[in-house]
Length: 126
Length: 419
Image 1 (cartoon, helix red, strand yellow):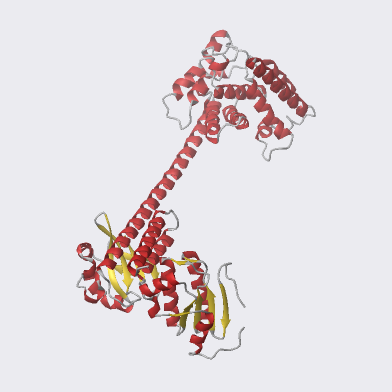
Image 2 (cartoon, helix red, strand yellow):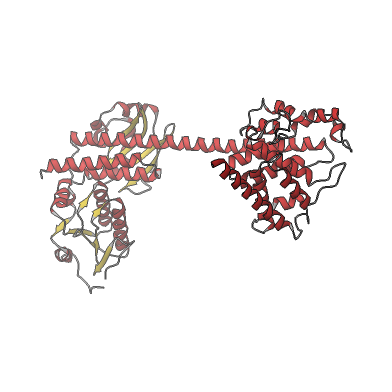
């Protein structure tokens, strides 16, 4: 079930993987909300994070910094991060800045979950 | 899009955002935190911190990202270490092969925290803090272009911090000045009130007169829509209006009968004497000496000391004049008892236009009416007049009739003037 947080961040869990939806513009305000939601999911035991960028048009510098922070926290928690449905321009930016050394870019949420499932056994969707 | 073009656009966007952030007047810590994010995000640096020089040789982290909060908290730095960093170029500030004092002294702590580059924030030739940065997410080494970008952004952040601190100091001093000014005003008011009491002590029959004239004047001015500053000013003028009586013989002031012409002439010198006393003082309010000087002037020119007429008399003096007369009529004097309120209203009606200004009388009548009618939480006029004085059944009617009459009269004068 999608859970809107603060009116902006939607998320749901598939087994021990959380899918968090980024908004249309990933900046300080929205970035911090996503970061909080990712932290919450990791704290509650998630070991996989899918950040879905299907609605995201633009990611600015603060967005990049926050995403790196999420990757960092996930690594410290032994979790993996996959970005899904990243548009071409943003994918090129992630590539150029080296984020793709730390996360996989999946075509869509299904592919992202499939990728993470190689590392864990999905449980019933809740 | 070429990667180099995309990188350029990304960097320009970050610089624009940084400029906006630094120019903002929001929360200081938030400004530094956001600036750090912008710097880290521009080159995709995984961690970093901004430390500010808080006092001689002491640094405190204002913002940290990607490093445990406790890891980078407080640092010390000597003058020599600061000078070294001031002169160093960016590549000399790389933790892995820097021989700079501060970096080599803290080498293990910085390495453990994942810090790879330490750059000073320099404003007007002085180190105001440090920016500590981790490596690039790409794993690549910093290029010269990266150093240029980082240098530019660190300079921006340094100026931003310096400006915010200066503004904080200015605001703090302004607040302090405001507090001192308020204290001075309070001291001034208390001194004036003490003076008013001293003036009234000279006249055993009119004790509290100056204080009451101050309060009545304040009430009338407020009813007439004066600003708070002006209201405070006229209250002071009311307190001090009789200060010239200090030079009048006590026997004349306290004479238990009507005084003779000579004594009257002596007594009538008090407004001009008051002006002489008050003029050399730099009052925080306008025209106080003039209000004291002209509080016995009349609209018909038969007043003193200068025999001014209507338009020549300052409005403040007209207010103090009414307040003074009202208090004289409503308090006992050595040669008579105080007059009834009905009698006072009759006097006001008769003398409006010759002695008193209609607008002032009307405002005072409205203020009294509001108290009598229960429209006011506080009832200072009723309190000053004493229990029972305004409780007559006919009081509201007396006042409403007077108000209506004065306002109709004023309308007639206005329409006659415009014809």
